[in-house]
Figure 1 (cartoon, rainbow, N blue to C red):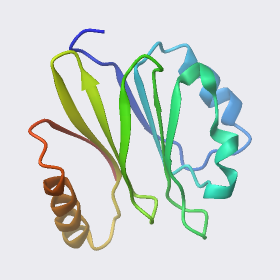
Figure 2 (cartoon, one colour; figure 1 turned 120 degrees about the horizontal axis):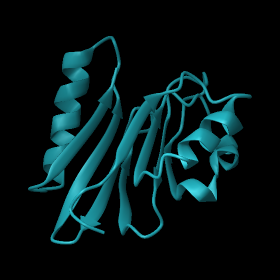
Figure 3 (tube, one colour; figure 1 turned 90 degrees about the vertical axis):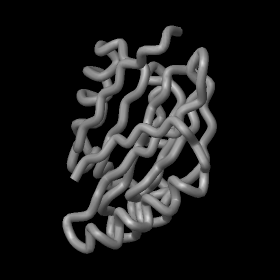
Length: 140
């Protein structure tokens, strides 16, 4: 693996009956990282997101109303560590090791309301990790 990663980020507005079609198409993309926002799946239903062809699965599940939620697939060969999951289904942070550095990836499904407070809290959380290399993947 070189220094470059191929990343796809999509707001899917609910992963329902079209799941197999969406995930099947993503398999053909030959990408390293896939981030899906607004998956609308609770913790108890995470098993429906498992799709080994896409790689390791990490989730920040939706709340009780089945809104929000993030799923991230990372190619198996990429060393990855889950470091933070937001209980509201809006933030998922992973440390990903590249050949010459470790990068903190923050996958974010930002709210339309109370954004100033949200980004202040996000900044504080990122600073806690004391990482030099940070990549934000944000969808609103």
